[in-house]
Length: 377
Image (cartoon, rainbow, N blue to C red; front, side):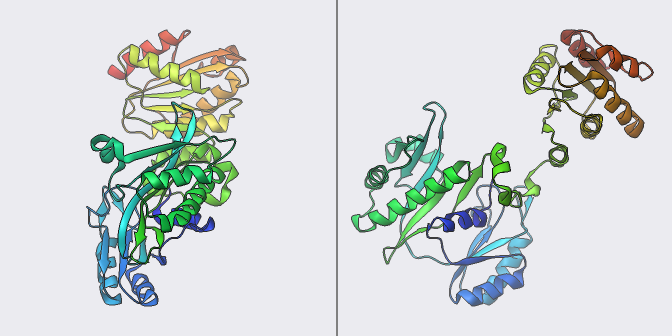
């Protein structure tokens, strides 16, 4: 789950990472009032979860409150890479002497967190890695020990930071590590981390990505979710505890178990079809959950057939069949439905579906072939 800049800075502030003075505004008049409060030049920053806000005109420097209101109104009217601007961050303008890149993320090959620094702050780190890899420093962190001061000091030296701000940099790096660990983050990034003319160090921008699987440990972050960047079907699926990811194929998949779902998608592709989604109803799914899952799948206008592949263990096939019947009565599907039920109460499940207009299959290969053929027809 990606956080907006202002949300990331809220977390930074909790761990004494310096950020510019500023407030969030939902209207142009709010932006004017905040600019009056800050009493000076301010920066108006659109809060959308995409890169390149500055290049799109979503970040503007203004000199006075009246200009802040006018520019904020222009930004609120913008659509940045398909996303509406609903909030802007109004911050004090900072005099910049030097910009540095600082981040912590996971290195999957090393299976360790890594602190990344670069003297080339304020630009895309991918471009620096490609053109000037020698300007990037990586410090690997033992998760059982944590980030040590000497590691942060080494990173600061490699980033050519002046000695007089070394202690401040170490505090920021350690604070970033605390954000990373305490909020189960996949990425915490400050780009740029700036040194001001009066030798202060400030996180001018911030980016945090939270591991969604850990959100149950951080209920206070759930309200940070931005629904504008999420698929409406995925939002609906989350209400019912369904694991759903929409794709661009034409064959809907309703499966119990992540491994079986992946195998189902693979074999659909083997027979020349394209899965329209990943959907795992999980173990012990109720009929209500199955009904919701089928309703979500059929809500995709690209669907030309649906493959229901259930291996009954904890999940009972008769309970799944009741969910299918309930969905049929509610939705009246107009596309072919291929059903394969194997395992606990499979016979009972097939009996419940005997009066429904479905295509049955005994093996996964047979089911996938029939789904692909039905979609083509």
